[in-house]
Length: 395
Image (cartoon, rainbow, N blue to C red; front, side):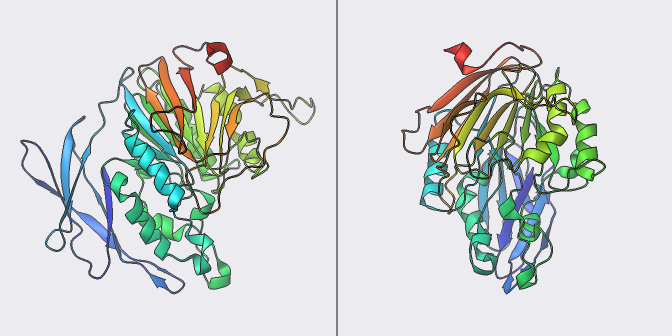
C-alpha cells in the first residue's frame, strides 16, 4: 500500500506508523521530494510503501510523526482468488467543483459501498487556470482526502495531467502528476508510471495511457503485448482495462480521438476476452454493447463495427465526475447500434463482482437518490460464462 501526503512549511518525517488490532506497531520509511512549476514551489511530497500486510484486515496508520500527527485507516483487499467478491467505484474527470463534491458524496453514501476507486483520469484541472495554477493540485488532494485516505484509488493519467506548457517554460510532461501520485508500476514490469497492472480480489486491472506513445515497438506496446498473456483467468477471472480517451464514443466531443489506440490494441482485447474497458475524457456517460471493429485491413474495406461480439469488451465512458468544463451534451445522431445507453449527466459507477461468472454494474446520477441506478447490467464473465449479457437480452 502506497501512502502519500504533503507537508507545507517543514519537511518533517517521511515515516508511516501502522498497525492492526492486536498487532504491535510497525514503521515504514518513505521519501520526500518537491518540485517547481513556473512560479509555484510545492510542499514536501511524501511517499511511503507499507509492506507485508495481511489480507482483509483493517490497519490504522499515522503520518506527520513528531510534528502534526494525523491518524487514518484502510482495509486491505481479500486474497486473490476466482470467486472473491469485491466492489469497485468508478469516477472520471472529477475536478473540484460543486458537482465534483456531489459525485464524491454520492459515491461515499452509495449503499453498494465501493472498496477501491478506479479513477479514469483528469484530476485537478489545474491547467484550466492561468499558468497551470498548481495550487489546484493541492486543493484537489485536500478535496479527495476524505475518501482517498481510507481506501485505495487506482490512477489513470488523462490529458489534464500532461501540464506541458512551453509558453511558461515547462517542457516536462506530467511533472505535477508524477511527483504527487505514485503507482506500483514496477511491480508489473512496466518502465513508466502511466501504464501498469494490479491484481485485486478476482480482478486483473490493466491501466493504459492514452497520452504515452503506444505504436509498435514503443515501451507501452511491448509491455501490453507481454502483459496480456500473463493474465491467469483461473485465478483472476475478471479482466478490466482503464484508459482515458474512449475508443467508442458517440458524442461530438473528442469524437474519434481514441481511434489510433483502438486500431493498435483492440484485436488483443478481443483475443484475450477483456470483460470491460472504462474510459473518461468525454464529460458524459455512455455504455456500449459488446462491440469490435477488427476485421478491416487496407484491402478488404470491412470497417463496420460488429455489435454483440461475445468475445469483445463492453466499453463504458464515465467522464462525468463534475469537472469545471461542464457536461458534453452534443450527441451524434442517430445513436449508433453499438451504443446501448448514453446520457449527459454527472455521476459515478459501481462494478460489483459476485463470483467468477457474474458481476453487477450500475451507474448513479447525481440528480437521483444515492441508491437509484440510472443504468445497470449484469456482466457475464467472458472466460467462464461467455453468453450474451447485453441489456436487450436481459430485459
